[in-house]
Length: 564
Image 1 (tube, rainbow, N blue to C red):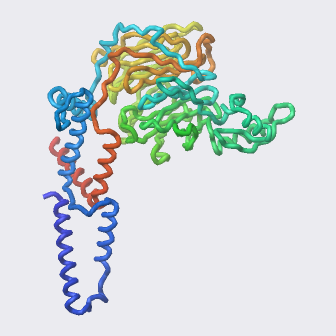
Image 2 (image 1 turned 30 degrees about the horizontal axis):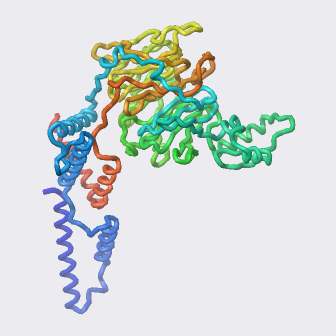
Image 3 (image 1 turned 60 degrees about the horizontal axis):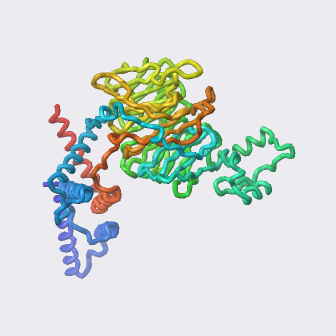
């Protein structure tokens, strides 16, 4: 018999005992009132409190296995309705039939295979030979200096990139209206755009930063501040940052799209609110430029709050976006970390100037080291799935890896050809669709290239390419797979070694072949899923939750014993 039923029966037994004791006290004229311990009133208060939290009369405890069955039925019913509404065919009950039921079964099977890391989207063969013309590449203006990084909102409502002038530029989609998220150093660069009020404030000895006025030392007569004065202003900004004080090197969005996280050469890791376009939090910990930030790419909206960051200080850190706090630090690299990617739960990939790549399994507190694949610093990496990834570096190599092998499966030398200034073109950006066999790379040769990452044949082979002039410093794939956003600049994101004067700083949106478009997955909406979880927790006491977790652990132990 399930434990919850035993608890429910015991509760009723205690109730009868209390009733009997009360009756006995009534017959004896209340002689027992002096020795009443008060436990009855405490139980009543706890019951009233639980009923208040549930906002309904206290129900009989539902067994754990029945709750699981009920929630599973609710999820399948919601998926039935979603499949039926998507096709426009449903019976009077709203339940999908025939082909729609097959779609639900397919979605459930896909989810199960994703959890076991067995699901793959084989799209490479359909992309081979596809033509991407210049007309398929849309340019968006707004970046003053080279764009260094890019991220796309989960709902594709906007795309944001960081720039070397210390500003972030956010474009609304599909219209393309640009909004600059300023503060810090970018305020000085764009003072002429802030209007008469800002000029008057500056003349009065104030600086405007994201709507905040703060007194600073007046400008000297010769127009040049001393080093001490500049340090005081920089210290003022650092104590209460309104933006970045140097190049923005990395950017990502939260899983619900309401927050933007950015890292810069100034060592700041900032959190921006999309609704107000202002800084709402600063994560402290890194002691060098924050070269890269990422959140897991397969997370549901608002469900996975982990934020990963990596820095020139040779460490990667894990943060909690919901609590806005520090979680842990990942040590291992011997030089600056230059690239970072996160795909599934507690899984991250980093690349470094020490010419190595490390795969971190954060929950297990373990890491896998992959070396001897590059002859120069590694500037880009991307996860294909939990067991496969690609990397690219300043040696011009594009390398395919498997977590089950220490040596690279395959490496393409001079993947983007030879640069005009001599030597191989550095691979500066990589991206990959979720759980697919395609990798996308960017460099300075004038093309974004698509590759078939064939792990069975242990080979990387070219598929197609899109024309983009300039340094491709960042790549992001839309969740729908319909387009790719590329951060383009005249200079490399990490330095000023080379320059392509004919390039235009800004964003390039590349329309992808239709075979890369992903179909919507059928599932409970985020609101419905959250409501189901909250409702379940409200109906359970803390003791019940603990015992249910223990029951689940016992079931897992039994399964392990069966496997042995």
